[in-house]
Every structure is written in C-alpha cells, then in structure tokens.
Image (cartoon, rainbow, N blue to C red):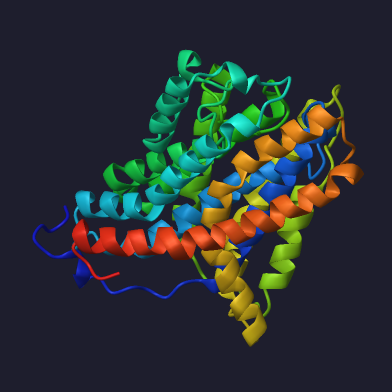
Length: 377
C-alpha cells in the first residue's frame, strides 16, 4: 500500500524518452491528415490516409509504457490520490481548451450533415460544460446529431478512455504481477483481434460513440493497448539500435497511410491488418524508440517540439475539421480545390497547439502542480 504523508515533491523526475515523444508527435500529425480526408470519404472503405485512427492505439500503448516507467516503482512514495491528481493536471487543461474552441467555432460549421443553426445557445452552453468535464453526451444532449460522445471536440472520446486506464492502473493494474498482466494483455489482444476480424466494421475505428459496438470496441482498444504498454515497461530490454526516430516516423506514416485492405466483401482482411499493427508492430516500435538515443541537434529539437505539441495538437484541431468539412460540402469542393484550406488547417493547428501549450497549458499545469499536487513543476 502507498505510504501516506510523503510529499509529492519527494519524487525525482526520471529521464524522458525523446524518440517516443517525437513519434507521438508524428502520430498526431497523421491523425490530422486522416481527419482532413474524412471530408472526401463516403465510408471507411475509401478513406484516404486510411488507417490514421490506429494512432489512438499507439497513444494508448505509449501512455501505458510511460505511466508504468514513471510510477511502477514509486508507490511507496505516493498515494492513489497523488497519482490521479497528477494525471488530471497533465491531461485536463487541454480537454477544457478543446471544448471551448469547439464551442467558439460551432456556429461556423453549418452544413447539410448537421444544421447548427437549430442549436440554441443554451444547448451549446450545456454541451460545452459536459465536454469540459468529460461527461459523454447522451442522445438527448448530442447537439451535432451524428452520435459522437463529444460533439464539440470529437477526439475527447479517447481521453475518456485514457482516464479509465489511469483509474484502472491506480486501483488494479499496478498490483498485478507481470505474469498476470501478460495474461490480461493476451486475453484483451485476442478480444481486440476478434472484434477487428469478425466485428461489424472490419476495423477498430470505434470508441467515439455510445453505441454498443463503439463502447465494446473502445474498451477493447484500451484494455489491450494500455496494459500492453505497461507490460512492456516492466519487461523492457533495450535493442541494439542506433537510429530510430526517422525510420520509426516513416513506419508510423506508412502504416497510417496504407489504403483499405480488402473490400466490402472481405472486411476481415482489414481487421487482420489493424490487429497486426496494434498487437505486434506498435509495441515493437515503442521498444525500438525507447532503445535508441537521439543523434544530432536537429533531430533532438524536432523530437522535443513534436513531443511538446503532440497532445495540444490532438486536442485543438478537430473543431476546425468540422469547419473544413462544412466548407468542402457546402462548396462541393474537390481535394485539389480545398488544398489551400487543408494546408492552412494543418499549419494553423500546429501554431495554435504551440500557443496553447506555452500560453495556457504549461502555465496552468505549473500553477495547479504547486497548489494541488504539492510539488514543484
């Protein structure tokens, strides 16, 4: 059991894995590109940058690995309350910011897919509050009308599951022995693969809605990937690799951009592809990224920058995807015609993410760390 009464600032920060930070940023960029091409897809079958949704599973694995590395050997110094405060301080400021940005541009997103003009200001306020508190929107409160848990900022759904992962870790997963954890990972992996191969969609692009299939798929994604990262942190042994960031980045981009595997008559093939990526390749990428050292000042700066903006970028870009989608549909644009807007969206999201990081997220986290967590930033 954790020892009470030891201040949180008794913990000494451990070294970071800069390559993993960089790969997380690359994955965040692939998510934006995946979402941009949603405006031109009729279904998952013809979506460009087709497998960008797998970045969420990569994030979950990274999260489990980092949390296990940072906290597994510290439970004699911290309490569950300390840990959960730290996770809340680390994650929630950008949840709130994403909700506020989503509310600010909501009435600019009108199109045939969702008529925002019919949404009252009062309904928007309620939606903003429940998104800011990470409360999933039920059908009666889902103001966009497309079934999302968080209609102002869709990607907040993965933070909902991230919080569940942190709670499971604090109360249960950290207490499991390595063998028991390995069994959990194996069982969850089998369940995830079964859902991907024999499930209704032939993919694991699920979790963002409260439908039964989305809820099941979302929990399977979390229950494999987060414990898999935790298990990897416990059994980690460095591989003899020297350069990992650029090959790893290329792997993330290629795996995300691969076209749909199989067609509507062979959904299982794409499910098999998703399973191999998440269960085999992503843990290997994390192990390789954690094994290597950054070489060169330029690569070091790139990794640091991408790592810094990765989470803010993930949390601020989607309100502008809604806006971009509405613009494309209202004007009946091709991708070529909308390319300047797409580029502006990507670049603008990166700039906005950096501004939010420096002017809002980092200062607020420093303040909250001093006031609530009892530790120096």
